[in-house]
Amino acid sequence: MPVRPKVLVVEDDDNLRQVMQAQLAKEGYETSSAPDVPTALKVLEKSLPQLVITDLNLPGLSGIDLLKRIRSESPGTALIVMTAFGTVQSAVEAMKFGAYDYIVKPIHPYELKALVSRALDHHRLIEEVQVLRSSLDEKYGFEQIIGSSRPLLAALDVARRVAATDATILIHGETGTGKELIARAIHLRSSRRDRPFATINCAAIPRELLESELFGYLKGSFTGALGHKKGKVEMVDGGTLLLDEIGEMPLELQVRILRLIQEKEIEKVGATSPTKVDVRIMAATHRDLAAMVKDGSFREDLYYRLLVVPIELPPLRERLEDIPELLQHFFSHSTAKHGRLDLMLPSRLVPYFSNYSWPGNVRQLQHVVERLVLLARSSEITPEELPEFLWFQNPREAIVARDLPDEGINLTKMEKDLILRVLERFSGNQTNAARYLGLSRRTLAYRMKKHRIPGEYVKEVRLGAG
Image (cartoon, rainbow, N blue to C red; front, side, top):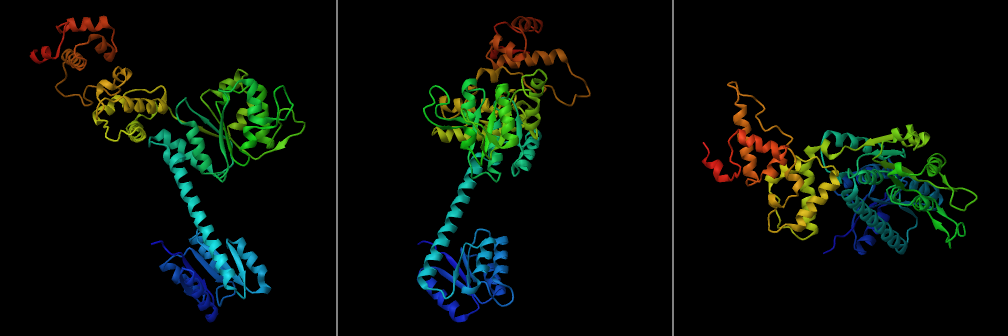
């Protein structure tokens, strides 16, 4: 059975209040009423309605006072104000404080019915938008950025604090660190969130096309321009544009971007006058722009104009403590995406991932996990299915105990035991064992001879060794 919308009527005229309450109940609404603001506030404490209809002229506190209180405590509640014919201006003033609409006394039943229906439809729409925004935040917002390492949290703190502003932002980080993800999250936290967000990759578009892609062109401005075309800047008017890999932008276009940031205007190819736009600019790069300024390949004035708020995204090798959480996130997403919810990733495999430096950063980790999910032969991923580079990465943690024993240690015996353990791990394969130990094949053979380890080592040899 559908839930009936709740409506509160606040009116000091007993007859009118009772008539309105009866009319609304007849239309299927769950109604309550109050003769003044204090009584209305008590009703609101017990149950919050979707709609409040209040007279402006009430004894003691006014309808405006009630409106302000509701707006501060329950901004999603719809509000309609009632007023006499001669005080319509007061009702218009009330709308500035957040009232949805007003109705003039005497109140006709059909007008009340239509207005209440519109107000509640508006309320439902607002709720749907809030749900949509919440889902967008969950998918693209800061909540989607996985990790709790200090370098990452420092970058996120800066991003959150500047999101609500219109400041120009320069995001620096290696390929695969999530620069576009951060930019999109900033946009969704800004006042421009309901306007478009777009990315243009300055490295992926040929130089001769980048200008028209950014700023658009007019019909006949060059051969093949058969009509007008809007550029990305104009298409996201009111929103946010991320200039990815801005270090690859030609010098002649850099001055156009500087003008866009400073003057809020563009000039289309073939145009004789500028066009005003309102776009927030963010830029991202893996290049050292300061060094490029010194060698003349990047404009100094644009560099400092972009550097209003710099955000440095750490590479994955500098936040290895985040890998288990990232691993779990990507694994859960991939198994759901590819219909392999029964697949398991044993916890004993996590160190293989944590000991690797990940030159391709988070993106590389994501792709490796997806490949494992796609190619897994059984219901559990095995060590043999891991990429070779995860096997041969030297461990980052020292193998010896952190606290050295008082009685001392036998270094020769420790080296022999370590070589035996590694050979056992690789089933006697000396080439793989040498790679894992960071030795040449010849050096490993020498050390095996030194410790009298058989050249054709198998696990049974070690078990029988004294």
